[in-house]
Image 1 (cartoon, one colour):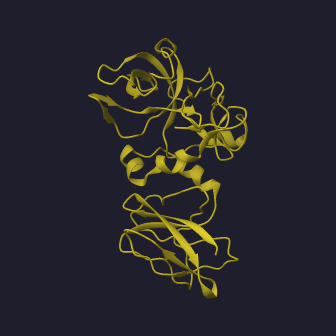
Image 2 (tube, one colour; image 1 turned 90 degrees about the vertical axis):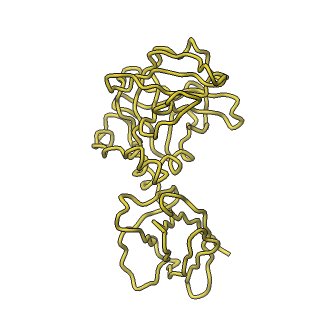
Amino acid sequence: MRKLGVTVGVGGALAANILNKSGGGRMRCLSVSPIVCTSFSFSTTSRRSIIRRQPHDEWPLLKTNTVVVNDYKSSSSYCTSTTAASVVVEYSNHNLRDAAKLLDIRVGRIVKAWRHEEAESLYVEEVDVGEGAPRIICSGLVNYIPLDQLEDRKVVVLANLKPRNMRGVKSCGMLLAASDASHHRVELLVPPQISLPGDRVWFGDLPTGTADATLPLPAPATPNQIQKKKIWELVQPHLVTDASCTAMLGDHIMQTSAGSVVCKSLKNANIS
């Protein structure tokens, strides 16, 4: 029995579903909750898939190993739901990168850092991300990085998350770091040293200085859109370092206009 993974969006939430092949080349949605799906035709020789989404959605929900086809016209019936925002099937690493472009990832510089007074595992940092005034960001790095190694350090910041209250401190962003499988070792991502605070970080196919590296980036999504569409939750599981400690999204290099983003020594590590 052949199974294909499906992503279903319901008001920005995700549900894990399974497609089960039945006779006549038809596929039927199974175990879909909290929505109800009907069967739809799907050619086993087709390289494209079907997506059904509400007109007001600005972007479909994206996931690696999926391809998105908007407003697909076909004589086939399709998966329907009273509340489904989207159904996505099949593989496309390119669409995952499109989702990542909506993340506002920037170069930052830690201006000042100190221990959180109410949380033993947290640092509080003032981080310059090119906005004129530094942001306050809380990071759970106390057990991994000495305090004296943080100040005046260049970092990579995810800047369009919704602010969170971290034990009385409003945290406006997240420092990105690599960690090993056991989470015993954690290293902050390192942008090129000539990068400036506020420089945008993106994922490219080709090295910096090529045509691919100079393509304009779309405006990042708002924090509310990032939360509603679960963009970070979709992208983050596919962020890793490779064998040379370079940060990657699938086959795409994390980079700035000045070069690649790396970590110090963690190879084939997760990034979050």
